[in-house]
Image (cartoon, rainbow, N blue to C red; front, side):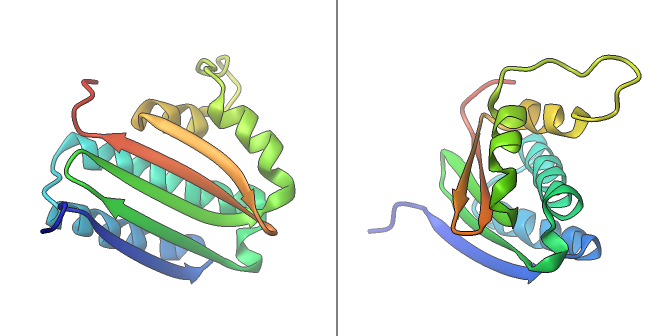
Length: 143
């Protein structure tokens, strides 16, 4: 008997041009697991922001971005690994705090604010020399 769970792993060079095809593949996989609509749009936005952040601020271009997707009937768990582990503290503070939209005129932090708005839980941790961001999207949670 299956629990309706399926997993996908994807690894790609840490290049911004690789993120849109990865996002399309990940969201297509989620659709295959029965997910639709706004939940996927929000997950796609969060995925794009985290991956771009790993490349732009975390030195992701020096290595690869790795995605591990766990699709279940009630939730999606997406882990994105990339960037340098020494950035964990700053990223954790920025993503896991309850923070508000940055002040007008300050463009820094707006993308991370969007990530917090688009998913139900965000966790950041080091894994060896890289950063892992775990995004959780629950089906039943109203937005």
